[in-house]
Image (cartoon, rainbow, N blue to C red):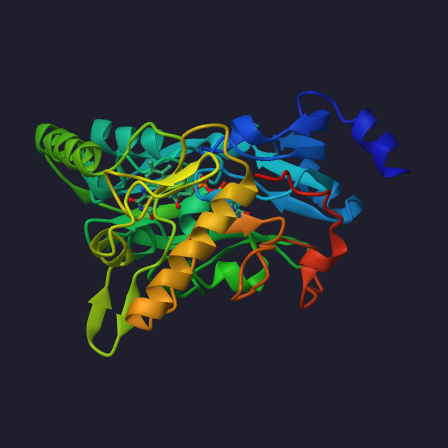
Length: 332
Ligand SMILES: Cc1cc2nc3c(=O)[nH]c(=O)nc-3n(C[C@H](O)[C@H](O)[C@H](O)COP(=O)(O)OP(=O)(O)OC[C@H]3O[C@@H](n4cnc5c(N)ncnc54)[C@H](O)[C@@H]3O)c2cc1C
C-alpha cells in the first residue's frame, strides 16, 4: 500500500494525520517550517505499522529543546499521544509513557506522596524528550531516578535497564531507540513537603530564567575541563553578550545561556547568534561550546559542523540527515 494511502486508512482512534503541517506552534521557540506529514500516534500497534512504512521521520516531544531549522521537511514528524501519554502509580514507583508531560508526572508524584522528582518541576516537555537528553536541574538528573525504559528498537518493543547517561546525554541518543516510557523509583514522602519543594524550585527557576519567553532552555552544554565545570552562561555574561541581537533572536538579559525569539526570529537568526557566541567564546577563552539543544534541519552557519539527530529505522546509517530534503531557510 502506498504511504499516503496507508495514512488515509488510519482510524482517528489510532492516529491523527495532518498534511503540510506548520510545526512552529509545536516548539517552545515558536520557530519551524512545515512537515509533509505530521502524525499523532496513539498506540504501539499503529506506531510499529507507521514506522515500517515511513522512510524518514523525526520524533517530536514537547519541542522545548529543539530548533527546527528548515522550511519544509518531506518526511513524517511523529508525536506520541493517546496511550503514550498515560501515567501509572505503583508502590514507591511511577510509570510514565513517553508522551506524558513532565508537569503531570511531577504532580502525580506529589499527589501520590512520592518524593524524588521535585527537581523536574518546571522543566517543560515530555518524558520521552527528557529521557533522551537526560534532563535535569539543581544538580539532579532524570535518568538517575529511572529503573527501566521502554523502547522501540530494531522492530521490537521491550523494557530495558541497559542504558547509560551523563550530563544532558543518554545512550538513547546514539542507539536509535524510540523511547516509549519509563519507570521511576521514588521514596515515600510528605505531600506538603514535596509541594513546598516543587514551589520553591519553580520560583527559583522563574527568578533566574526568562520563563514563558519563546526559547528552548540552555543553548549550550556545560563543559568539564579537567576537574573544573564551566558554565557557558557565566562566560557569555562576563563577555557582556547579554542582550546581543541578530534579527529577531537575542541573548536573554535574564540568563545569558538562553537565546530568545523576541521578534519573529527565523532559525537562521538563532543559528547565526549561536555561531557568533561560539566564535567570541573561542577567541577570548579558547573554549569550544557545544549545543545542548537539538538542531534538526541543518546548521548551515555552524563552523563546527555536526549532524543533528534524526531517527531512521535500523539499520541506522551514519548520516540520516542527508536523506532529508529540506527547503531553503528563511533569511534574516
Ligand atoms: C524555559 C525552559 C526551561 C528549561 N529548563 C531546563 C532545565 O532546567 N533542564 C533541562 O534539562 N532542560 C531544560 N529545558 C529544555 C527542555 O525542556 C528539556 O530538555 C526537555 O526534556 C525536552 O523535552 P521535549 O519533550 O520538549 O523534547 P523535544 O525538544 O521535543 O525533543 C528533544 C530531542 O528528543 C528527541 N525525542 C523526543 N521524544 C522522544 C522519544 N519518545 N523517543 C526518542 N527520542 C525522542 C527528539 O527527537 C529530539 O531529538 C528548558 C526549556 C525551556 C523552554
